[in-house]
Image (cartoon, rainbow, N blue to C red; front, side, top):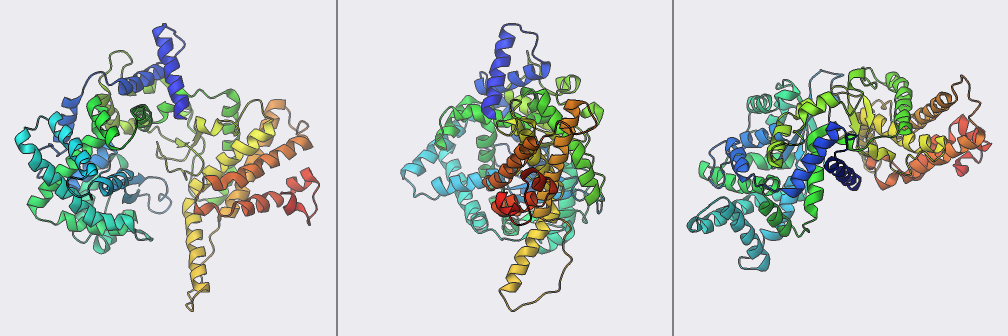
Length: 561
């Protein structure tokens, strides 16, 4: 997808150089934003220093600010997560209390840092890898105008703090506790972070995550790897001198992970340290812009009319399914004023000017500060199969789909209608249903694990009610929704009220495509999706339409699936 984005950006740049007026203003601004990142023609080192000082990390000076304050400030305001990540789900828990659900766990960038420290930080002094890391830190200090007389002392302190963080937090990352805890913040502080009061968590969350609503001690929090947070408490309770020294290590993290957007020298040194080619800078720019601009990114991928119609048909078919199985008023229909992903008036104000825009780092700061404006109401964008709607650019549950769903062979205008609906339509319906009913599926998985444990032990436990949904029932409902959407497409194309154009061959193609989508799903899905062959046979063979299409009887239908 990033290759297609780069091609689109290059095409827009060519149109701009030739004064072509067919390019939308959103595409122009996106292309300029990406190009400014790729080129980095002007250094924004001053802006980076200002940013770090403003957020309590005046590197290479130590900071006296509380570490938890620093973590939540960067996480809530800039979506930048040093040790742990906090995300807010405003839709999944609304059916009970109306409060947001906090999700906390190790951040992906921290996993990368742990791996980096195990590669470089655990080496004996004087080894090749140790010298390579020294060279990198020294070059960063030089960029920040640190006199040579202080360099060795700062490097030694940073390395000491790196080793301390690795020693305290590394074991929790290497052997994380398998359980995922879910409890109110008050219980979380009592059992996991006793050194940090519930009132402290609530105060900081309301300060730095105000865009997500109001939090209280009763707000539910879902915690992955509780051992990490137990170790975090220990570090936060060390003496003042050690905590201040730790900010030198954290400051270098910020320089490494954000500085590449501000100065080409930082970008080149960081790529060299990680053993990546210079061409990796371009992909990093594309990923960063995509995460910063929200659904404006999709304006780079104009969707053809057939794909848009498929999304509309699947959405209409899913409304009945969702309303039958939930008490929550999920809105799968985007409001008319939000339906267009390339809303010129909205994004033209949100994105940097296409001609005289600021440097890329300044643009990133501005976009991240106002990213809540890019979370247009009533839009969830399904990025790819298996995401469980984890990539959210919005707060509610209306249905859109990104261009990635319509890469061949999932959708192509030259393929028969039945194949497109059986492939792309089936996957799209499946993805939406798994996202909306994720917790029911997760509880079913936990129940299966519990039943397996009881069956292989002498223990017994009271029976619990079976969940209404399971991975298998989602398969069936998604397939039925895709079939209904397919028929809607037939009716729309023929402008009739019957299905005269729906031939037995088209049904056959539909079910072959559906079966393909099911059987190939084990390439990208997780534990909730179950065994691929079973998922292929059971829901497809159970449908009367399947028996009619293949003229099956009850004895051989599963084999033909």
